[in-house]
Length: 178
Image (cartoon, rainbow, N blue to C red; front, top):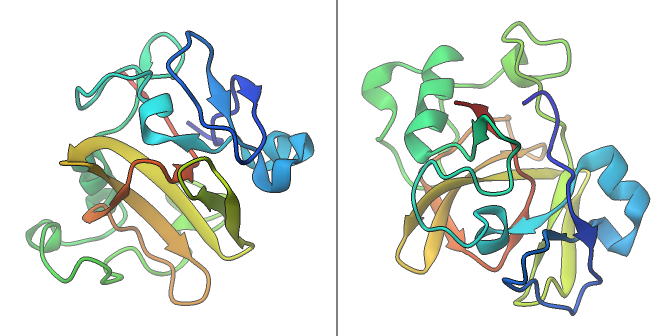
């Protein structure tokens, strides 16, 4: 997708998203205008529409799905990472996709909105990363955690799809066409 997903109804921080047949999202600092600009922030379970299958449709539109960790690796290779390096390095090691490929107007065609932030705490109680962090979940889980990718402007930008975080964090979502 060209933009972060923005579907569902906003719930305030401190309210936990639940499996109630309605898509629930947080907006940075509880401000609906932030969802319009940056997209919604979704817990992993909510993003997956309470499925646990990698590559599930989740809250994506028909014909799309939540990318797996391996699909993020494919993106890294497309952006110049040597395929032998995909699953190497430390969990938070920035690698392979530095430079202009992910920047606005970059050469890859994939543009990542920088600084969308995230929420943390079991009920989205706190917001962080405004202007510096952009985090996107994958549909691949590891126990009670899930894999995600991130860009951080405080360092050289890079994509990581080998880091995990608790599923109650709320991140941005991009979908991949089936």
